[in-house]
Each structure stands twice: as C-alpha cells, then as structure tokens.
Image 1 (cartoon, rainbow, N blue to C red):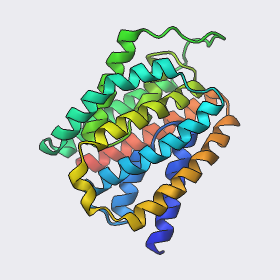
Image 2: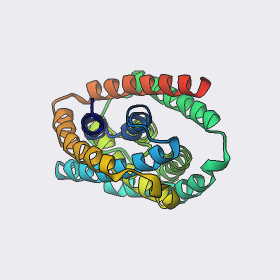
Image 3: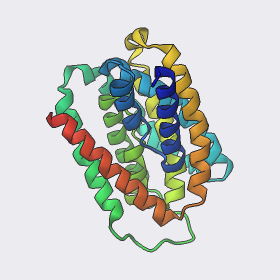
Image 4: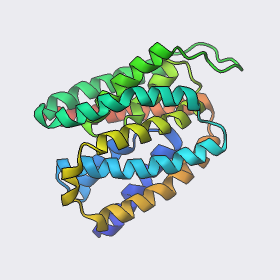
Length: 249
C-alpha cells in the first residue's frame, strides 16, 4: 500500500476520533506516523501536534455551531494549561520517554475506569464550575500535553466529565477548545523539529483528518451521551494498554 493511501486512511481515522470523541487524535496519529509512515519519534510527535491542531480547530467549529462548547469553562481550563504545556514541552527531551509513557498510560486507564462507573444522575442545568478545580485540572493536563506531545483530549474529556461534571456532548465539544490551545502551546516549543517533517505526507494526512472530523461530529449526534461515554472509556483503555506495552518493551 502506498504512503499516500496510508496517510489518507490514518488521517480519516484520526479525524473521526476527534470529531466523535473529542480526543484520541494524537495517540492515534503518532503511532501511525511512526509505524506506518516511517517518521522518527521526534518528528512524529511534532507532526501529530500539527495534524491535531488543524483538525481540532475544524471540529471545534462544528461543535460550536450546535452549542456543545462551554466557552467560559473551556477557556479557563485551557488557559491554565498553556504555561505548563510550554514548559513541559521544553523539558520533555531531558526525561526518559518510557517512564513518561508508562505513567501517562496509568493515568489514562484510571480515567477510563472512573468514566465506566455509574455516575450521578444528570440534570437539565449546566454544572457550576469551580474555577480553582478547573484551573488545577487544566494545568495538570497541559503539563502532560507538553511532556508527551499529545493534544490531551483523551484525558480532557474524562476530566470534564468526572471532575467538572459536564455531560458527555458538552465535554466532547469543550475538550476540542482545550486540545487546540494546548497543542499550539506545545507546538511553539518544538520549532526545531519541524525541519525534518515530510509535508507531502502531512498535508494529505491533515486533509483527510479534517474531513473525518465532520463525519465524527455527525456520528456523535446519533449516539446517546451514555453510549458515547462508554465507547470513549473503552477506547481509552485500549490506548492505555498499548502505551503501557510500548513503554515496557
């Protein structure tokens, strides 16, 4: 199979995940870039951030049109993570990647398990967001984004659901705002690694991801909040298992 076809297929899957689940783009994109398209890990993490930034902004627009973005809470959550994301991104090259990946996998697994547990009954009123809690959670997520070169959406959604009590649809839409901000902040610290990126691969990959994000948004509209939450949790568990195996091998 040609590199172009692989890039298009992988891009479509990444976009579908971001559009439907509000996360998972980078943790799907980076392995695809390394194992399918032959990128080095450093180039793959930077390319993944480029792809996810462009795709997340597109998906954010789609979710905003249907009112699924909590702008005030999302902006606070994202703003708190900007400096930690930039600082951690600059420090990432000095830390053992296997240790970071293993720790991130453990956090992802815990978040998935928490999402699978029965939660409180939902109400018709938006949850009251506690600024300190939102800022603390956002800062922690930003640090993880910078360290591992991922947008953080597959942790942002569980955080918004379990810590800030968002319903799933609003968590998916709002997470895209967080992903976009964190990815751009982390990308700003990786300018030197963009020199080795093959734009003839990244261009088609990103284009397919953007189109896939629109399909993902339509898919999310047809699934109940509970079903979407369970699907996301199962995907998160699978990603955590893959990352843990990768860290240990």
